Image 1 (tube, one colour):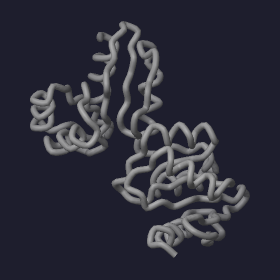
Image 2: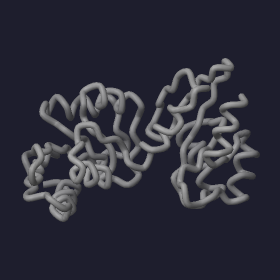
Image 3: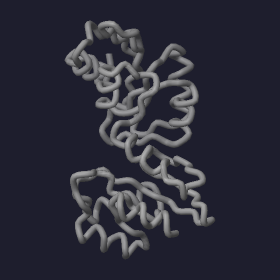
Image 4: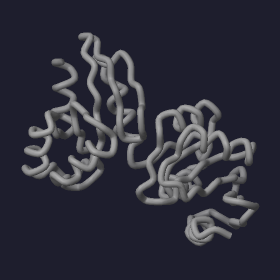
Amino acid sequence: MSWQVNYALENVRKVPRVTSAEHVHGDAIKITVHNQPDVLAVISNAYTITAELATQYHQEFPDMDFLCGYRKECVWEGGAIRYLEDNTIGWGSAGTLSSAISTGNAKTAAHKEYVFSYRLIRQLRCIMNIVREFDRVLTVNLSSGCTLRIGMILDYEPTADAVRTLWDRFGPVDIVWNINPNGNPTQNAIEAGRQLGCKVVKWDELKTLLQSS
């Protein structure tokens, strides 16, 4: 049994209403929840979930309800997200899996760290189209004809290093959006963004920028 499956079983068994969690084979576990359908979850140790990897898991486990990227640093490519959502398969972190089990929505769950922000930006009338390149990187087409690339950072108080790391890992962005509702970007982060040629903002400023661009 792989390390991530072992840890997942240990943690899932602590989730309220879970009556059992057992290793099926490979990276798959079966979770039995009181008064809910069983959940077949695949626990991946990949650093990046690609469309190809998501497809391979689905082919190996046709009844998969949820694909879990167990590593904290796991990144989801947009193609993988589209594939899973098109096939009604939930996706996200270990925390997302635990929440999905509790609420009974494993098949439709999305990464809990980004789901609220993604829904929030989709509601803006000025946005004509959104392409999700990664779980945390979006390209938006605005009604003005302008196209902007937005990277999301979850840190409580993003630093200059966090901004540069996002830029280096995912490429140039026009806007770095600090999606943590409780913190604010440091002045060094804002200055690092200025030096790179992007703005580092919270939601209210982002909304204003998109509506006026």
